[in-house]
Length: 71
Image (cartoon, rainbow, N blue to C red; front, top):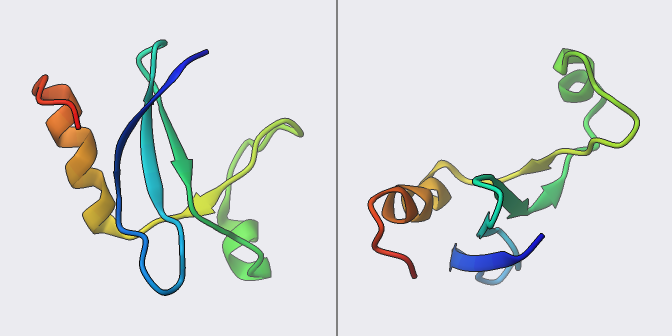
């Protein structure tokens, strides 16, 4: 799998960053979710899966990718 950097809102807290893959998916670099309540709300989680939290604004980079604008 290859990643293409789409954008980042990195600031003082570091992260979140969004990548497009060559498989038509996205990879998110963000803050690890450790809150027990939030983890309890997740469904059908496989052992190989993990989750990261990102701000809503980061998804604007995915919209640019869908429109073929790239980074």
